[in-house]
Image 1 (cartoon, rainbow, N blue to C red):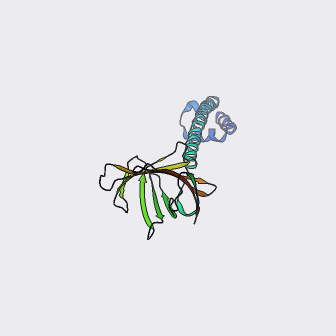
Image 2: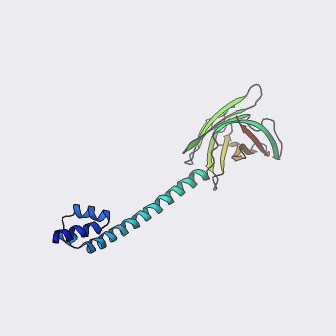
Image 3: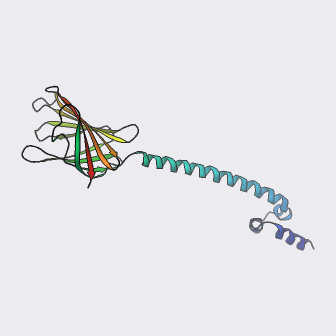
Length: 212
């Protein structure tokens, strides 16, 4: 008779209670289903709390990653010159590159530019890292050139600064160029400011590029 009552009590318990009873050898749980329900309720409550906390953490991490990726623009691509306009000073026909190829990585950006020049076009490839260290190269006129780059605070533009030094005295600044690259409705925008340290000339231009 006692056995039948015990069986009946098991049948009234939820399915997970029955499984716990079979796995648990404790007489207290077998003879007192009410106590078992209380224990299981506490366990399930703690489990639900942990799941909620874990879910919140996962959502926060996902949102941060999403904003991190979506917040910073991607300039990668092959871009062809469309037009340019003067912002200040003289507008030079070859003041902006004819084509630009950009390869943007997580820790660096590489820019290959083809610029019109007397006789033939000049191609330069420069890779700028985001650790603040300048990239050094030599211009076609055999001048030392240092380039640094950084993202704007809103990650919507990349600022590239190039310092060109005198051909004779490599410690004397000859030319400074500040390029700000951004995107506008699918087009690449180059805002360029040039400062000639030799004669004091300053000019600014804005060029637009279409993706090829």
